[in-house]
Image (cartoon, rainbow, N blue to C red):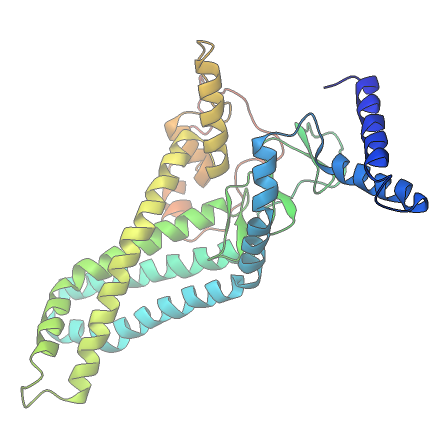
Amino acid sequence: MRPCSSVMHLLLRCLRGCGRHGRSHMPRRLRQPVSYIKLIFKSLYFNSLTNSEVVLDCILEPVFWMVEVVTRWFGMVFVFLVVALTSSVVFIAYFCLLPLVLYTYSPGWMMWHICYGHWNLVMIVFHYYKATNTPPGYPPKMKNDVPFVSFCKKCVIPKPARSHHCGICKTCILKMDHHCPWLNNCVGHYNHRYFFSFCLFLTLGCMYCSISGRYLFIDAYNAIDEVSQPPYTYKDRMFHKSVIYMWVLTSTVAVALGGLTLWHAVLITRGETSIERHINNKEAKRLAKRGRVYRNPFSYGKLNNWKVFFGVEKRSHWLTRVLLPSGHTPYGDGLTWDIYPFKKDMMPV
């Protein structure tokens, strides 16, 4: 940072220079206002802290603003698409595939498809509803007795550990992972489990539809190619097109969402969020240059991270809180966190 005297000297030189430059081009009464305006303009970009990153952020600010506006206003559209596409698959499963299962499958396979399909559907609907309607958690507006690690310049409030500001929601989020447009909501401390469970069970449901319907898809695809057959009716064509639509949609979603779910599973195993992953990588590289090893202070060990994430406190909770719908609150309040509890089991089972 330059000394104050140097900065004042530079400003005075600019002011004199502007005055001399404009002496022969404009009336005397306009020289001082014009020089003052030029000085103000130069002060906007003269800063000893200015670097390439600041300039790049300023250039890309309109792009960030546009993304925030589009995401905010089209959030309900994304939610509608999720509901509409999921409902279309359920409709095809009930009115096209279920009658076929009841008439052609053995009693054992029939019970399997009915029980698993309905369980998977209930888990998808429950967790999506909770993920979209559960607030992610917000830090208190005033600092009480909670330790804060930084200060949000946009919210003008203190921030606890693992909290970050969301430009779309215009507020800070406790243990923020990301803002999900498909939920029209931020993923944070209180709805992170619902988000991951929704992704997991929707992936399993799409894989189930894709694997169990692969032979129906092949038959439907071949039948549409053989349109010249006389008994091929409009009802048959609609049935085959519905099967093709369902198989292509579920297979595509299974691959795309499966990759996202796997990535979040890796983050949960490490005790990180999506934002913390980038922060920890930078910190690990910085310490590596000094010959030191970075340890994530919020990781409790691989198994403990999953216990803390799902709220598993005893063996029965793997069934009642993970494999069945559960609205229990997550571990902790999102404001304070245990640091380096590697040598103890946070939630013994």
